[in-house]
Image (cartoon, rainbow, N blue to C red; front, side, top):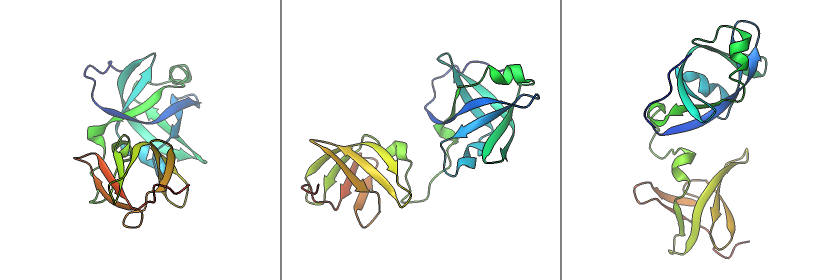
Length: 174
């Protein structure tokens, strides 16, 4: 099917292979990308099985009902597709599209130190949370804080080079 990935390029996990679809080697795909169909824009995926990453070319990708399916190069029957069930799907970060000024990938925000406009340290971004209305910074410090990621209202500045986020947030707010 594919050769193991030789260099440990930085990658980002976007989903996983769920199960075979049909008899011709198609696989059902779970996507964490937003919108979920964005995982199909990448022509090469890295699949992780048994702690080994392999590059696999995506021959075809489409929606099927409410889900997604993909046809991968070298996967020609349901037995080969079944062998991929559970494999994580990642792409090299070099494949990610460039963002507009002021947009950020969540992965870039994780670990950044967060300070109030007055310079009070709140902690570091542990992870991000999607609420439907807006994304939320989950900050771990002396306690956990949830700060809406709304630029110019609560998030005043994001300095990727300094790994620092400045927020308009009362440190005593429960």
